[in-house]
Image (cartoon, rainbow, N blue to C red; front, side):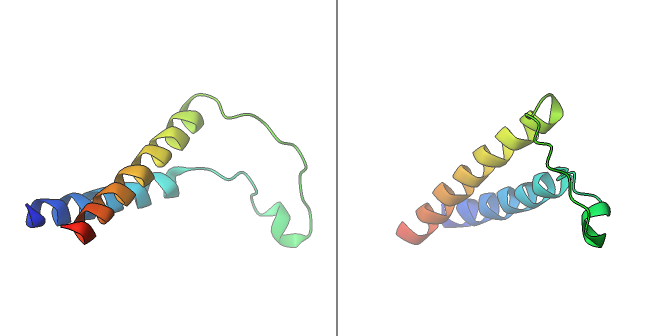
Length: 71
């Protein structure tokens, strides 16, 4: 049981890192040189799905980590 939880924790952690890296912040190189854009848009399409998947994976990671500590 403990081995399966640790394997699940590793898999969820890797998936969480991949999903976070796939998200596009949209700042670009313009903000590195002093420029900034104050345009805020809503998440649509793939951005919204990645955002929701990130939340689900974070909750799963927390739950599995808590289970590893308790067991």
